[in-house]
Amino acid sequence: MPADIILIGPVRTGKSTVGKLLAGKLNLPQVSLDELRLPYYQEIGYDERLARTIRTRGGFLALVLYWQLFDVYSVERVLAEHSNCVFDFGAGVGVYESRELCTRIQQALQPYPHVFLLLPSPDPAESLQILRARDPEPPSDLNFDFNAHFLHHPGYYDLAKFTIYTKGRTPEETCEAILRLARM
Image (cartoon, rainbow, N blue to C red; front, side, top):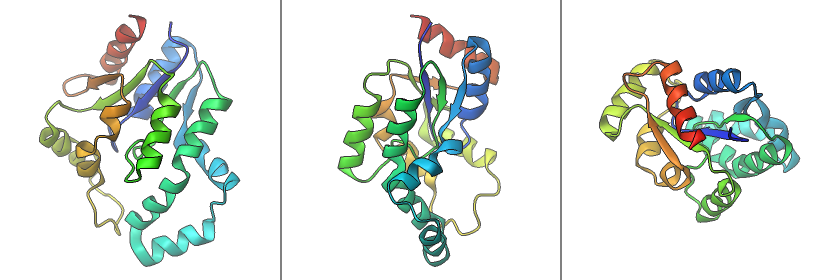
């Protein structure tokens, strides 16, 4: 069995749900980066007060861009501190505008053979439609379609060793598809 499984993908693709199922089937811990990232961010200077100011003045998009400054470090740290786990990473992990951050995340994930990108469909337009339906109330100060950007950015595709399409599959069926590929 694989030592580690890493799940990446846009908002509402089921990373946490599938991660929980995989962890249960494999009897491994589930590690959710969204739950652990803040202390890692703080290790390298993340300022919560500044984050609130950025959100107030620039909206949710500005806050996400601030988070990106700390994202790769949090991935490096969580991978260094945890092994034999099922990891579900936040939606933005891997989708960076900085070439330096893209290179660092590729280097961090390169040794891991089981990096799975979860998408609803091979058709980006259909994926976007499905993801929008799953997130009927995005942040009120969001003036940017993250999932549209995520689906067209090369970041996920560069990192993924496998892509799993979830349309028409239950989370359990998605889990089984991942396990089949991970056992190869």
